[in-house]
Length: 246
Image (cartoon, rainbow, N blue to C red):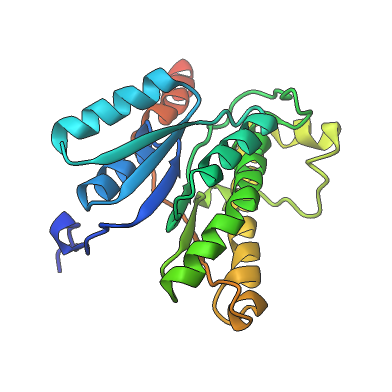
């Protein structure tokens, strides 16, 4: 039996729905934004640079001139920028039907951001957790108004979290442990944190949760492994393998 092929025509319309895609200007985020726009959703692209966000929007509008696309400047290396972006989005009074936490970096060398957290853990996990926290009032308000199953949070993780045995770790606080995991270990740990984030949200706001039972709002949450996709982010891996003659 041949594998099933994805067909855009099989997806339901997303007219009237609003999504926020972090890192929606490139790679998996761009492809996700393209599909959402093609199905009629209003999509906010979060990116560090207005120039790169607008370039992505221009490319999508060339394919789908009817697209309803907007930018949200958000720098994951600055937690204050994350809070400001969330507050800016919330202040517009718009509903939010889908939050896709996708932005990330891949197995970069050890670096501490100005907020004193290791870069991979901050960019891929902490920034997303903080963004989600500040958008929860909007997500829950949308859920109460739209009904069951209308609001989703999707955490883009990776099977890379299965490649190492982490045990009990204080990686957020212990610099020696942070360094000991090395580049790909820290990548895997940040992706494990994405999975745990999704599980935590499901426990708090998913079907059967106290929030759902009390009528405060139901949010469907999941994490996923997108597969090994040839995006710009993977250039670092190709360069690394090439330097070793592979």
